[in-house]
Image (cartoon, rainbow, N blue to C red; front, side, top):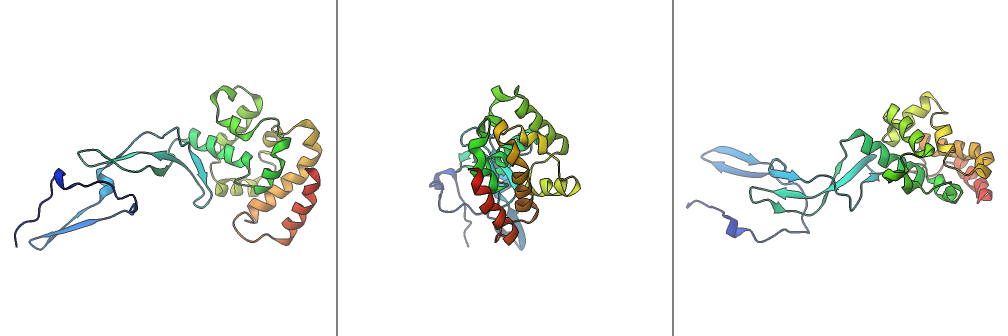
Length: 211
């Protein structure tokens, strides 16, 4: 059988319908040679657009990168990867927490916040007390996922109480204790990923009076 060879001229382009990882195996005189494409990929620095995000399904904070494959640096479609930098990971999780991606009950009360959740992603807001206090507390415990927050709240149910309270207008403070209990119910009982418990469902009906 004649040898089968490939050159750069054989490259036709990227198949955007196929993004599954592959392992290419070639047999050479009864020896198996395997090539994992990941070892030939070079990833760009995290992209600013689209911005990093919290993936609730995997409970990870991820960023978008642009991969380049092979010695010719063929550009591949954007790919998401977990963020390795602790500070960046905590910052994105803080945004997700305030926005209601971790505790959905926060979505209905965002209008009572003193500042929008996305402000925590802006460098110019780092000097604000509410931003600095929340990020500092999250960093001190490295709270960057629902799993870690759940563990922290089991140890200390009041952790982050004052820091999140600072994000709400003073007129809402009298309702915050009720909201805090609802946040605990949603996270500790896992209601954001499965059927709602009757107890949390009753609390949600009651909290409608706040809006």
